[in-house]
Image (tube, rainbow, N blue to C red; front, side, top):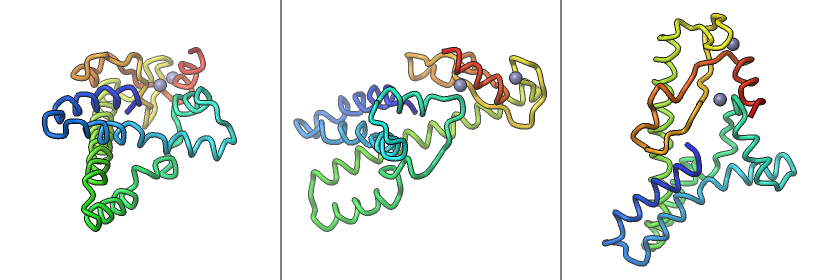
Length: 175
Ligand SMILES: [Zn+2]
Ligand SMILES: [Zn+2]
């Protein structure tokens, strides 16, 4: 899920939680947004490149490599450690940070499941043929044509295309 989507959804969560958390509402909000910093740090270290734009380009390529190392803060071990620390110290702040992180990871999990089932359905509908070149492939890649501003319209099949790796890369290179 994109950082922009996380900011929007976390802001929604913050508005709902505001009556209970009052001034502390920024804590879960900030942690649910800043958790994605792990992607950027991984990129900066491994590519020796501090440019945010280069990092965005890397993660925005047609079929970015899905490496667990890029998601260290999303890892169950990191979340589990924080849980133990929060329970041991009974720190309200740590619980709020953990709540924000879990909110983010939960949204990611929903997004992965939704995207996966959408992709399989579109491949089935396209009869395994690439929408650009018409060649048949076992596994096509899901390309996002357009990101809907309305979150409820996010997984509308109209916004996506299933393409072969070659056509998909070409599509991203044109941007
Ligand atoms: Zn193709
Ligand atoms: Zn794409």
